[in-house]
Length: 154
Image 1: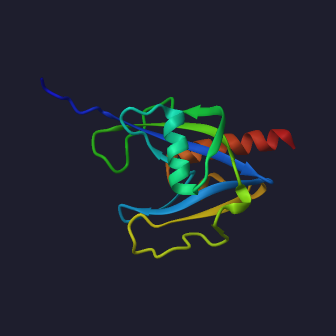
Image 2: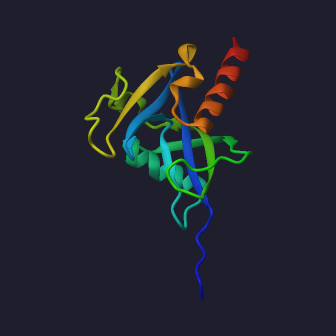
């Protein structure tokens, strides 16, 4: 039996808004400083919601409630860090179990920038949210969708 490498990478992210602020993760991976939403890669045997709950426990240190699906990539997006792979990103609205307990910073990339895997959390006021605050194209698209939704509610 020959195993064939799958051409897809699936990542799942959470959109947590609390008191008018969006939670973001600043991270350092593959010598790249990045700002993204909480979440990460789906592992074999996981569903998307189980993946998101596991990733949030790892990154945020607390359980989350997954409220609703927000967006799944609907176009071709090559993976940035893995050659010849297509990225599929799934976004859900989430509710943090204890947002006040999160260790957050007011400073972007508030960690040792030389350490691979370093991470810090920040709140961004949704009034000030722009697409260019995010590193990756799909996150920027989702930020644009959030901005449109927020502006539609004003």
